[in-house]
Length: 242
Image 1 (cartoon, rainbow, N blue to C red):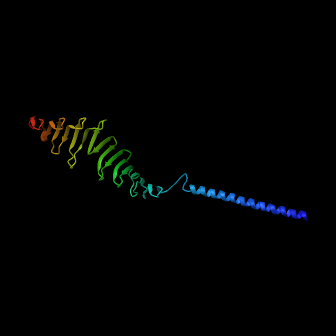
Image 2 (cartoon, rainbow, N blue to C red):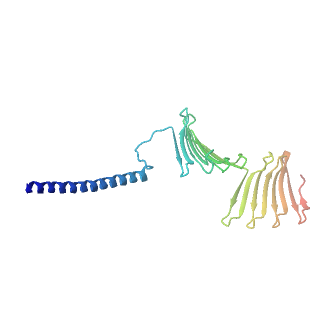
Image 3 (cartoon, rainbow, N blue to C red):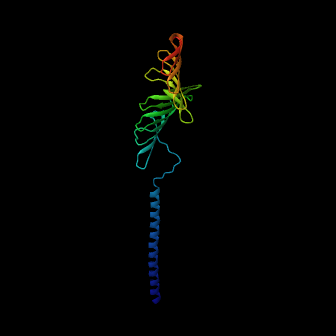
């Protein structure tokens, strides 16, 4: 009888010990689950894939504002990438490609959505670089059409290593488009000026160190040439008849 009671006591002790082991095991398993969930929560915004296929992809900043958008047109002609600044209505930088027009382009806009510069390529040969003013009008352009290149500008300036303007060329405004070519000395004073006026007069003028006209050579309509030498007051000292 005593052996039976002793056996029951040992069985009860073993059951108590097993219950303690089960409780510790439950705590360990629960801790592991919580650690795994915490790790997944910290990494749940990280996605790693080998391939993504979509018609539009938008990348946002930490506040949810769109900063980059990639998309294609409904007709599958245009592929476009836009990078946004403070305003997501228009892209500050846009990169596009058109299949139908065999053209690629990149454009830059200012903070108000006005285009300020664009670079375009068409038919694998024609390249056009445009610079726009604040009104959206082209003020300068570099054009390359196969073997031919051209520079368009209201005025172009050549600056020396000291930062001083030395040569200026271009056309006047006011819809007259009179071509001119100016040369400046190292102090920035205009010393030589060549003009073709709207009335047909061609003029080459030489200025003194005070930028006052000292002499001039020109040609009037009907090829009548003339030469004029001026004094310091700007009055004619000598001249051939026009």
